[in-house]
Length: 612
Image 1 (cartoon, rainbow, N blue to C red):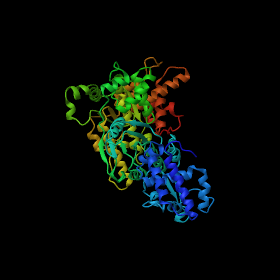
Image 2 (image 1 turned 135 degrees about the vertical axis):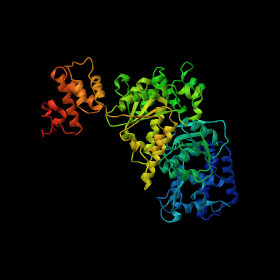
Image 3 (image 1 turned 60 degrees about the vertical axis):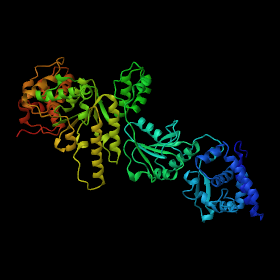
């Protein structure tokens, strides 16, 4: 086999195998010949061959490079396969064993021999070789790991076991720490900080692998390409990752994460901590992405700027549409979008409650003036608006949130708690991170229904589940503190909400069941003017049935469909049957005392009780 460039290493490996064969036949090793082979190897390592570059990246000594060369020749040259099998007395052993390696280099003065492939050796730390245990120690086989041979002769194919590389980053600054740990909210700023703080001029960016072999492939790829590695840690750094980073000291590493990585998961080697400056995109960055004529109408982070910039052209230069794509793609898996169409006129609430709702709108609309222009930002910990709506089901909490969103010209996203809360440790925080990250760019209202499931009181820690549940609450508090948008939390049981959340709430409204006058008004609002109505007695309905506004709305819709099915006008009887239908749906008995003179209409409904 011919090797075009840097043939010195190939000649060395083949020469050492020749020495092995001749000494087996009884010929003494020639010291001068061994020196000449070493000189040829050194000459090859001084050149610009792929082999020379790879061994330099791995920080191998000349002797370690010689072992690698010999193992590579044994793999690459078919003539050596049969030769090794004969020398090792086993036709199945066509790779070098530890015993054969020791014999090959025993005549080279000062050579480390098998120590060159021992655990924690440079060749092992660079993930170049592995020793396969098979029988007695001397019979253990030494194999070059997959994908390395091609690289040694100049092949450019990536390591098949390396994780997917997201991108390669170049920099003109080579000085920095060999291991940097970066934290910060903005992904782009985290990567920038890692590049600036870590030694090296080129880096590959990868998500943290979960499989040990992927880490080995990553080390090999970085060693061959001579690049540093920026690892994006999502949940926690796997133990295999910490181990490989500890071993591969010839490579520059950076671990980047939103949170501070805990000390017990970090590699046991010196590291430098960096907090990324999560400043918003500069005017130049904004103009470079969207042009000079597009105003800064959305509070995008740097990483969101990249994503929205790609969608900007696809949406015909519509920034709002591009941001909606960013938000909906991530949020709609965990929340339901409500496009508001209700107005203040649709609400039936007391004047004091309506005044509080208008206060929420005012706080959001005038935040920039009060906090920035008037200087109040220095005296508050959060610019966002957090409101708590409490009260029984059907009392108008969701409707009020929709009206507020509509008044502000924003979409309302109702969080699906079944998609957010997970039994798996760390998944709930990850889902919440997705929600707040997407919401921060989209100018929208976040609506947490049944909020006590997420914002519940922290418990005494009795087991690991309690500890992680409390971590979820603490994480949510942090995100609420940092969020600059509008959050509405709705609960049927305010007493179950954690006190720490209550302290962060700007407005609280208790939604009570409506009184008779309010119920009459709700009935009227839920029977549209254009609907065919046959003198529906809304005063009797509102005064007689002590029910919530939600039940009234559903009953009115049910009444309309009954009338449509008869091709007739809507009557009071239809409305009464609508109420009865809602009672049955809620598991409530249908009794004469509830329906009075209209009881005969509902006696045939399932669930009706006899007159007692």
